[in-house]
Length: 254
Image 1: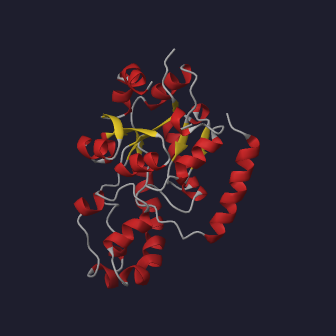
Image 2: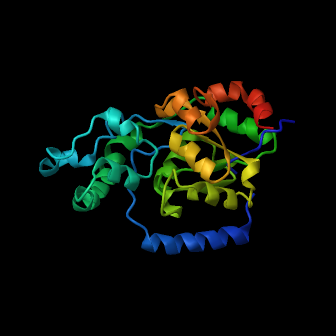
Image 3: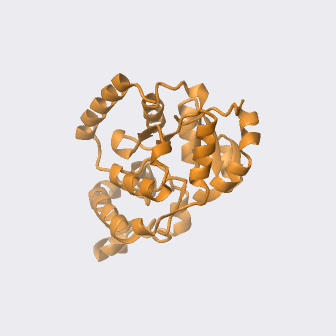
């Protein structure tokens, strides 16, 4: 049997109920979510232009805030509020933040959500993990409704033991909150017994903050060097490549 640890993460009902109650309270206080063309690393985004700041649809904003996609790519997977504060320093953030949040969510759902497709072999990979009697949790900054759509594309809902999404936390990655929620919902899995799989440096940094080991994938547009520098113990091209090296990686992380 493979000795591969739990991949991010059944579920303690008491712990889950407590966590969900806390999450509801947090949602009353949290900042409005901005989803930066967010999709889990198991999916391909068809939104090549979605990363442009959505205020481009408003001519009063367009002349002030234009960013090349290469600049925005560096922030892919980052907490959107951190991203905006880096891209729009000073008073600009306060002036346009609410409008950007509103327009981005609407535009992404209308123009890009339906373009997302699943990588091949995702279900086969999940089945391999389950044969090793390991638990699987999804920790994604996508909103709950987006996650439902993504799960329908991946066809893995019956294999997932726990889910933590952007609606459950106040801060996205690189904050460790999503991973901590996923571990708790997966049955209080210890960090040292889990592995985080993601395709951005922010996934790896969040894993490090949660004391969880990380594996990277090149599907997020970042280089192998960037992912390794962020703390990934191994880096693969995509889920199919990871599946092909599953036993090798299990030995590495044993």
